[in-house]
Amino acid sequence: MLKRADELNFFWAYNKEELSKDKHLVLLDNVQFIYELALAQLELQSLGVNFEITNGLREFKLLESKDEEELRRKLAYFKYVNGQPTDYFQIIQKNRTRSVNQYLTHWIYPYKGKFHPQMIRALLNIIGLEKGDTVLDPFIGSGTTAVEAQLLGINCIGIDVSPLCVLQSKVKTESIDVLPQIREWKEEIIKRIKPSLFNLEGKTIDDAINLIPDEEVKNFYRMAKLVAISDNARRGREFSNAFLKNLEVMISSISDYVDIIKELNLKLGRIHIKTGDSRALSLNNESIDGIVTSPPYSIALDYVSNDAHALKELGYDLTLIREKFVGVRGKGQARIDLYNDDMKNSLKEMFRILKPQKYAVIVIGNAIYMGHEIKTVEFIIDYANKIGFNLVKNIDKIIFGLYNVMQKENILIFQKRG
Image 1 (cartoon, rainbow, N blue to C red):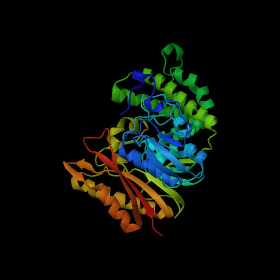
Image 2 (cartoon, rainbow, N blue to C red):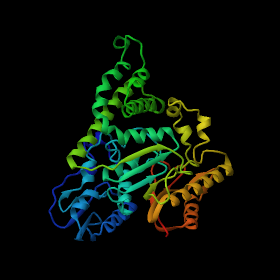
Image 3 (cartoon, rainbow, N blue to C red):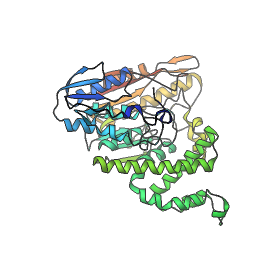
Image 4 (spheres, rainbow, N blue to C red):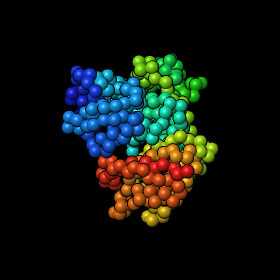
């Protein structure tokens, strides 16, 4: 679906053709799948738009809208509203990668099972979250929900049991506040990577990072080191070269983020990322305006083994930390039973902290384990209904990259009764 930047020198989703200023809403060119079209329509409906689809499903005729400026500010699947570019279309220009979905800081660290950020932006709109509202992601993972909420001015609480997930989510959302300090420390950090002529004291990169007084700056350089370690472990790239190359791109991506905030006059949401357990949330009853999350596919993907190199670098014992993760404990049927118990407790906590009549979006799929399909989607729907949720939408979503264990996900939109 995605074309490579080195083949075309631009992203096909970024085509800036001349448009008439008729009443049109034009989809981004990378919108290819039925689920994306479904989300695009739900997005418009949630924002009070009366429309009809024209031009072979590529354009929507705008019949009536309460606020066209709001559409330009919020929409995820459209690049133009009446000839004017949407904020999202301008945001995705800030991309240092070859993937159209890895703009700004989304690309930092190759975490498996990442959310599609465009989908998350749309879902935040679909469930009616406004500036100043608070969304929870109790499985924050790579931080996609936090970044997209931040861009829309929505506050986000991100929780994860994995210290790697907490670190990368913090770096992606907090580094914009300390860009000058990050640049100030760059030369000192690079000295520890270059040959010994520049490092006469024999100090290591860790020595330099530990000297950084600001925690957000320190986290940035810890993350830069982990990205290089990942490149070495996964791709066989030499550590020093990988570190220097990734550091430049990371700083450029943070700078892009700062620039787009100024260019679009964005009022960012407040982000709070912390280590925690989805099965026992340290949040008050009925304190959250919405939930957008994807529970770990631990039955299909062992997150501890997959990121072992990073977790070890962070100083964690893999055997001990495995006992804290959802779904990676046990073998055979015991593993499935433990996962289901974990999900029951997590769902009960989501219900407890969500305000009445508000929405929880859960993106989940059925995995293949030991040659059998595990009916996780059906299990989630059934249990959520038992504890007080109504399923209001169930959208099929094709998966790329996990064909051996999963073919599709379901976007489940629940509303809390009461």
